[in-house]
Amino acid sequence: MDNVTLFLPNDFYPLEKETFRLYYISAFTDQQQINLYIEDNFGQLVQLTFAFNNENDKEEQK
Image (cartoon, rainbow, N blue to C red):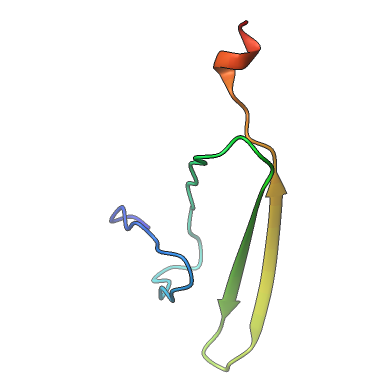
């Protein structure tokens, strides 16, 4: 969000705009998966799942 809101897991956050940017910092080196649930004013729910691996520049430089 534009106001640098820190999101907590399993909580609802109303979107004030159509577009938003989510920054995620992993504390783990394993594969990560994030599920986003987007619900409109009519109760229609869409789930988006993102899976990715953490990159660690320090390990690559060794």
